[in-house]
Structure formats: C-alpha cells, structure tokens
Length: 202
Image (cartoon, rainbow, N blue to C red; front, side, top):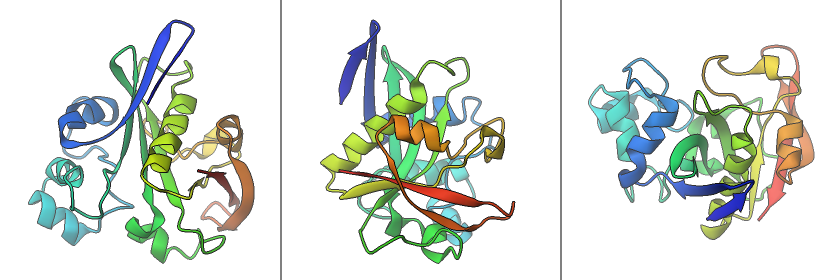
C-alpha cells in the first residue's frame, strides 16, 4: 500500500514481527519500559504477564505473531520515504476487551467493525499530513483483511488528547478528511462530554 504526493513516497504496512523496530521507533524511540506500548485496550494485565513475562515490550512483540491474540497484527506503521513516521492502532472491535466491556463506547449496530484506538506521529514529523496518511493506510489494510468497515471515536478538540506527549484519538475533522462519516455518539465520558462515532465503509 503506497502512494506518492508532493515528492513524498508514503507506504503503510501491518506491524509484523519484522517491522516491530519500526513501530517502536514511532511509539517508544527510547525503549522505556514504563512508556506506552499501545496494549491497554488489547490486553489485560494477566495476558501481558503471560506474553511478556513482566515486560510490556515483549508482550507487544508477541502481538505481531500469527495466532497470538487474534489473527491480525495490532496495527500499521506509515513510512515517508522509507522512514517510519506514524502508527495507527486498529483491529476488530471484538479483539479489544476494553471496548467490548465499555459502557461508554457501545456498538452502534451489529456490523463487525474494526476500530482505530489511537494514532501516533513520530516526533519531528508532525504537521506534515502523517495522521491522514496513517488513517487512510489503516483503512486500506483493514479492507484487505476483510473488514466491512472501520470506526473511530474521536473528540471535537485536540485538547482532549489521551496524552499530550504521545497519542491521541484524533479529531472529527481529521477523520472526515480521511473519508469517515459521523454515525452516532458515545455515552458521556469522564469529562462529561460524549465522543462522536465515525465510520468508513470498506
């Protein structure tokens, strides 16, 4: 999956074991043990212990192997001219136990959607269109894997980021630029404001 625009060659690939270091360069370049490895929605603490023996990095590495926690890699990495610059965590909603159990983010209908959990842009590469390219590449990959549609639960303001230094769930406008449409809203979140549910059919 690759496109070229403004002399930049964009590619997006699933995080298979051979691409783990590229994923890590985006989300955790210093390989800090306490830093986010994008596991919280996908794995519970006992599963992280089982897969990683106490190491979140080892647990994250295990997710890229076929047959480990579902049949799909945990997301995609986007490259600009061969450099890994973006990460998009996505997979079948059914593979994300926190979503399945959520009383706030409930299914809109019975479509077996895939869900984008977060988007990360590598430091030094922000404000260059990486997020849109990552989302578009994620949808293309999900479609190639048989996903009927991809959903996300963005916010209306960048101030509602999950972590100002790391990842965020995206804004409605960002997803609309990538061809998503609003299909509903969530229950009120901890901030007292619901999130919008956006979807793009595959």
